[in-house]
Amino acid sequence: MELQLIQDLLSTLMLPSRLDEIHLDEIQRSIFIKRDDLIHPVISGNKWRKLDGHIQEFIRSGANRMVSMGGVHSNHLHALAYVSNFLKCSCDLLVYGWHDAILTPTLKDAMNNSANLHSLTRSEAQQIRNQGIGTISDKWTDAYWIPEGGGGDTGSIGMAKLVHEMPDDFDQEENLLLCPCGSGTSLFGLLEFTKKIQVVSLKNVVNASYPKLNNARLRWIQAIENKSFGHFQSSIHSSKCGY
Image 1 (cartoon, helix red, strand yellow):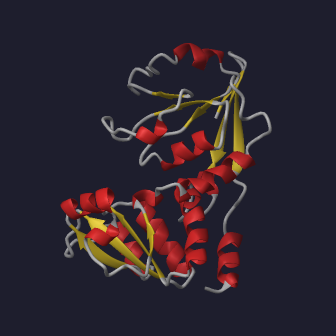
Image 2 (cartoon, rainbow, N blue to C red):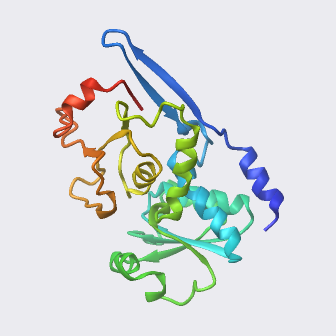
């Protein structure tokens, strides 16, 4: 892969992303919003943060194409297709819950970005999650595999860069960080690359379990309707500022 293509891609990203402050005069607290949504029109937010480490590893691996898995509305697959097309490398997307006759807008965009789509059954998808891509086919043995959602330890590397972009007094025990949780990759990275800041999160799937997120600094929002933060309510009121 040409180094120039990587440099061209990076030049399109608005990094470091902006940090906006909302000051609440009545309680003398500030909320800071990390505007990763402004990184790029297509690969914004944690989609780029999670792909960052994988793209670096893909280049080091010498593989000739990238392969990943997701559902018919996967933002990760959408972003990966865009990046692979920009870098002029082959990309295979394994899509579960999809029938060839129906293309969602996400999959249409992926095809327009030259991605190769392959239909998976949900049982095959679960087999890949449990045992790896090699258990369903040896077709992609020469490819660089990116776990579903851009996950894995490599997927959390980009969060180290996000933490580095934050103010010097960000990682303090009196501060509070709020981050939603889907695959858990971003949240794992934030916990991994900070030491003191308190963290609260809301699961996209209520009954999902995240063994890797067993951390004393993390609390789950139990019910967004009544804003119940479990046993963390007093910490929210006493926090110096929130992110």
